[in-house]
Length: 249
Length: 249
Image (cartoon, rainbow over all chains, first blue to last red):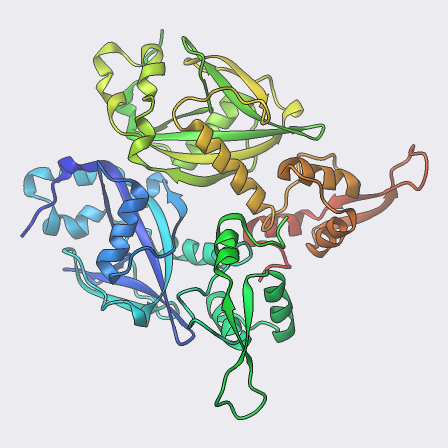
């Protein structure tokens, strides 16, 4: 058994990553089943003293899914005193990763930085559990198990933020094929939003964002009236990621 | 001289508050001039072990401006290692608030939670300096002094976030009079965005948000064609604060 060296870590600070997985118009989230417990947890970790917090979140994402350089965003800082009350992390994980002499480190108040990411989950490696978990898996948002600590709240907040940010920022790159139809793009939005959208309004609003390029090609092999294929204008896409859509104030 | 008791504080964690002040269509920010230094700083502080981090930010806002229960929002977590390199806070403030025996506490790496608020600055009390500063004042965004540490970056990020969030959330309550004209609301947006907006587009977009009530009254005393007075529909305003505008996805 390998214990973590708490001397190398920032005390009282953790990160929690809500990694959403999209595949065939279904939205899932990556969860880990804790050892010696029925509870599940978000992937996360602690912060090395010599590492940026954002970089530590990227490490967690890569360790669990094998992907790097993917959109990973801070969405909230969880700093309430009460978050440690209902089940302190040490109850679940200290036996696995903390040496007996070093348990006090775990018993202090912890604050946590929440990150979210959205990946095409069939394109990433088989999820990998860590030392504290026996299983790491994609779980449907409609069928969530009981989560430890405030991880249920963190997940809910991440999903709310993701939906709100659709109004300021594009999604789709790395989630859809290189070229895609308007109905395919709409289905992605409907999956993330969890509701149906009007076809004409969707098309009008999406085109107003000015991030799509009409490839002048049609999807072949469809029975009638082949739909137009689009791709993202990457320059405009990344500008919109940074500064919002051109329709913004 | 009163030293702070670091035993009561969460180690390595601070908060920084970007308090924007709006008055007569000018946007300012609340800054403090540090004692024994030419540098200025954002209002901020440390976090008591028994206090929620969000509540600690509200305390900072109230101590400096006297206002409470005002919109105060987390906008970013600053967790880079490099943020302490260019001028550690202890260089500026330890002599004022840290006892000589307790300086090591200040020399650890600090991460910081950034909050922003927007107030009508003529309606709040005269800004109050703290133990580390000799002056607390509203400073124009166009005429910023040199700021300590990464406070210039934090301020810039807050302003960027405020402008982006105008697309998801309403502003104006507590900044404008109870009833106001469309040009007055537009002038507020133009001040925050730092650019002119088209009158017709502004009106159309603003009405589409469905947060305004036409009072059926006109501003009297104007020379010709008196403009309509609006007020905010508070229920819809607060719903939009939480869930975005009704025009959102």
